[in-house]
Image 1 (cartoon, rainbow, N blue to C red):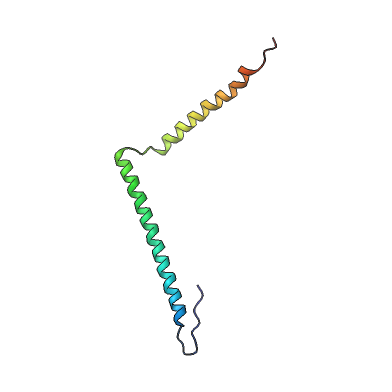
Image 2: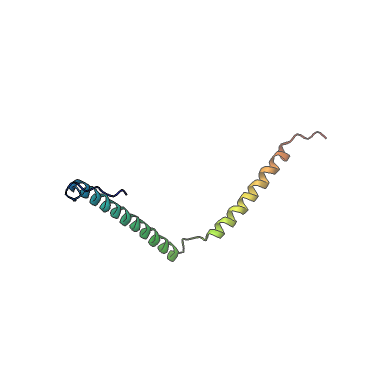
Length: 87
């Protein structure tokens, strides 16, 4: 932020001070809102963990890999079953 230029007698104009105060309050309010949202997400996660609703990331990744491998094998085998037999 640029330093404020004082008027002739060394004081910063009131409208500039009001603008800075409003900006500071707005920034503080946004920071508080972000903190509240983060706190709420953390509490939801802790509640889900306590209920046993949370699945580990590694397990999800492994299961997805197995599903994609199976789907790929089926898709690669499909043209062989549909190809005309010229024997």
